[in-house]
Length: 134
Image 1 (cartoon, helix red, strand yellow):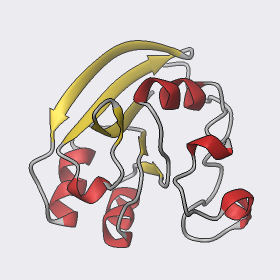
Image 2 (image 1 turned 120 degrees about the horizontal axis):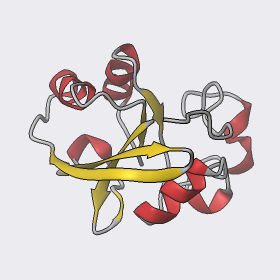
Image 3 (image 1 turned 120 degrees about the vertical axis):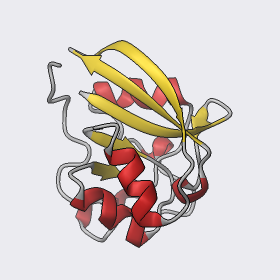
Image 4 (image 1 turned 90 degrees about the vertical axis):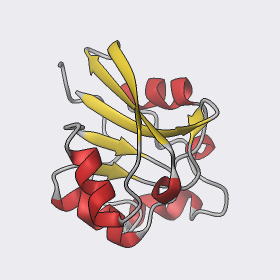
């Protein structure tokens, strides 16, 4: 499974739309196999979505993201998990273990425990257990 996370100072970048770099991590069986940092050059939402989609991530874990960019990514087949904060390694570990739904990873000011009950920020099975084996 390939996971993309916009980064800023070893943390999830607070706003994906203006993030300068993206960490792309290949994981299999809950273990990291490789990681690469990619410079994000496109600022237009559709071009940024194309740039990210060209890296073939299965999942994008990010902080705040604009609605047009989130929809462009989703349309390109990238599962978006927004409103996440924390250290990159902590977030990766929590995702691999199915624990990303913990309140400590939710950006301040977000809807707390209600986030799993619908709304645009949390759809589907965003916090399901690890599903990929590589």
